[in-house]
Amino acid sequence: MGTNDQNINTEIISDEVNKRRNFAIISHPDAGKTTLTEKLLLYGGAIQQAGAVKARGNQRKATSDWMELEKQRGISITSTVLQFEYEESVINLLDTPGHQDFSEDTYRTLAAADNAVMLEDAAKGLEPQTRKLFEVCKMRKIPIFTFINKMDRPGREPLTLLDEIESELGLATIPINWPIGSGDQFRGVIDRLTKEVILFDKAARGKQSYEKRIKLDEQNLSNYLEENLLNNALEELEVLDEAGASFDKEKIYCGELTPVFFGSAMTNFGVRPFLDKFLNLAKKPSSRNSNNGNIEPTFNEFSGFVFKLQANMDPKHRDRVAFIRVCSGRFEKDMSVKHSRTGKVIRLSRPQKIFGKDREVVDDAYPGDVIGLNNPGMFSIGDTLYTGNHIEYEGIPCFSPEIFSWLRNPNPSAFKNFRKGVNELREEGAVQILYDIDESKRDPILAAVGQLQLEVVKHRLKNEYGVDSILESMPYQIARWVSEGWSSVDELGRVFNCKIVKDCWNRPVILFKNEWNLNQFLEDQPKLNLNKVAPVVSGVEPIDL
Image (cartoon, rainbow, N blue to C red; front, side, top):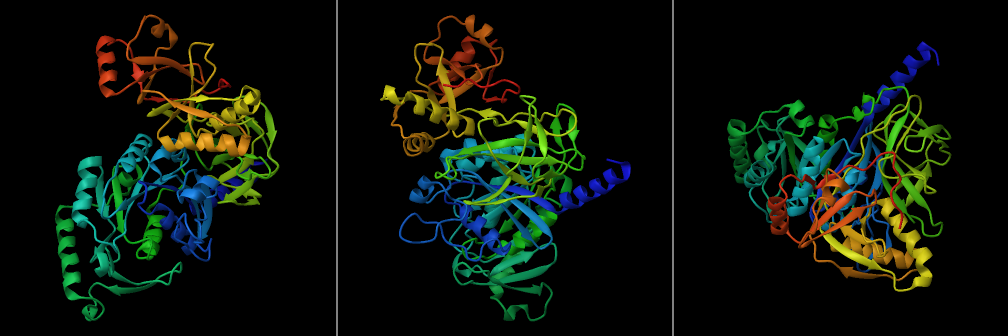
């Protein structure tokens, strides 16, 4: 490629990168994540009607939920990717599981996100799952945008909600809009940047809401809403103007300051104002760290990494899909790329854009986009694909599980299918698989953040691989990786009230019954370094069952 062609190519990539915004929504169960997701898709024209997510009757199921167990329970279990266009932007929404038992998959999805939207229930404020996911965003310095939802229901005072975020998360807040009323008196919001009042009319079910914008200094403003509600909102804004944080885009980009929005996803109040401001404030796809330093998205060579694997998205075809986050250059259908871990050259012949359960073949993709590739067993989470000189992006870490169970195979004749199912589900990262250091004990140990993950493995082994399994719980709540490896473990001798196992990269892991048990162990072994987060090992094949 000549210099002139390279310059033209760089300009095209730069234009496409500037159009793109990529984000994940993090929330606690029942905060309204799926409803907000569908309303964003509605405004983007990706769906024609949004439906409430319920597991009963003949009500519509969420577009983003596809697995059978999700349909039964009315919750999002897996993470999918939803791309849609809004005005002149291309939005990649990484739809993460909201259920508290599915944060392991969410952790990995956050590795592919450039921004996070923290969704809060106005009545409940910060909840445990939100705190956990916030810690992952903080670790990666991801910009966080806060949407305080369900303002149309009785809730806590907005100033109290802001104070909770600042005091408990150490995250400064900057409200971009401010609610006028709440509960059945929620009328709209005041846009602090444009000095406008945005009033909403309730939308027909599943449709876009009508918005009326009026300048804050409009003489007849009181003709449109109750004066006492407006005056109360203005008084609260005066407090914010005097004591609140000032706007600083750099602090937003490094995750120190969160823009806050108020609304109701169910009634569409505030969804469009949030989307408009988010696109202006959100971070576009940026450089990522690799073995060659930071790789800019406008770099001419293609590169990307695998952040998620999913088996049996289409049970009729028994398929396996690898989700690739594009990091640099331009992806093109049928291009040949190098696989960093194995050194093999792979032709990517059927790249897919996956929207819930629907798929279409994509011709090209740019940094910030996510593509699905058929995975005949060659990809692992964290793998880098690239053209040109060798590139390897940082691995996606493993996080400490909290629930552990032996997974027993009651039917020895079905061991082949049992092993296949366990290995493929381990590749997905739905759960972590640990092994006893006693080679005679062949049953794997499932390690998960919540009980439902274990139930899903059992459910999928039965429905997708045709094998029964038995879960036998273990009395442990905490896992820690041993930094120095097996040599330091061998020096420990006998240990009490804990269990030493190995992960699928043959690294020593110690399981503890509780925090007290862990602290006691650390007092007895002060020289031992234990980690609650461990990197995925690059260039090494994980152990199969």
